[in-house]
Length: 530
Image (cartoon, rainbow, N blue to C red; front, side, top):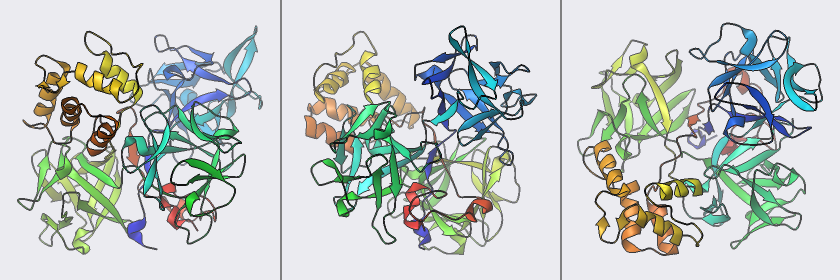
């Protein structure tokens, strides 16, 4: 096994879900203003919940309402209500739940199901022994990946209008999430990261398309490696048994596996991270002009690092700057950068009780440390030695974001004309024009904010620079797509936080893996499925 091929998957965290009563196809909802719970046919913000594991040994978890941060709870009679979260913990077991095979069970009520009873014709959520009308966890977050065709060097893409295509880019429109259906099968759903309601579907005529919130059999897939030395995985329809294929012109469904039905799945962050200090909001940077490691308050290319797995729980950090070097700890205990990969470039990652990880030199067993001004190596294990790995996600923009930016200011641009001309109008209306950035406009404010954030300049390829390049040149469809691919238009949505899953526990390692599809290993590590 080539260790450098092992990828750290990009997983949205904490996992979000709907609590769905599938028999009546309703969802548990909560009114943020008073915390009351009720049943709803909607699939909007009030119906979204987060699962926060409290004890990995027992599986006890909190279920937090995303819109209000209130905790789902059950009183002594089994009635469902929500309570305010107090520092992420609660005084008793009323808000503790166990999720087994996607069924929600109350810890306070001897693991009885979260169910619903019929009260005068209305469904009321209640802890119940009824095994029929119970809530199931319908996950809406998962592993974020690129799907590339090795034969065409193109990636699946869900563009600004939510339409499927193939693209040479590695941007947000090309990122998809793989979500386990959770019905005890190997079935998954594949949704767009940018347009999170768009679900990859297929019809019996072989047509491949995206649909809004489609959760029938036509949206279920099985991802499997057809044979041991295959150059990709097959994405098979769970209903029809046919395979997703790209023939160089369009998506089709094939009855058998060939080179066009193989897909290379890779992690959405491409193994690139910012190494951020928890208590100082500073990052580790590398200045190639001075060949030095420094403490930085920015998030630019110089602060980006690629993490490689080196086996035995060890990793290395390689700067993403051109000709990037490895972060090393010398025999004298100094932090430096080096082109040489050796023992000085090896680091251990351990979980920190302060809400992150410790980064520990393999050779010296000392910890990477930050005091807010400089970086150092320390024998201490405290909050000053605690770090967060921030995945660097590709830039993206959705129709909702386009609409939002178009509505900022005095007038809203009508989106009734074809792309990209609607976007051209929006960008011009924001103040990005052929004559430059208009004084007093939204664009001017954005430029000022970006200049302040970056220490006085506007970054090439940044939001302001790319929007201005589009507004100045009046780009057509091809030029617009080129500009979007060359630089970040809008940064990755802050509502979709992704975290790195750094590995598995010893118990998981001993469980083995499936011969045909993933059970314990990430989809981006399909090459190592056994």
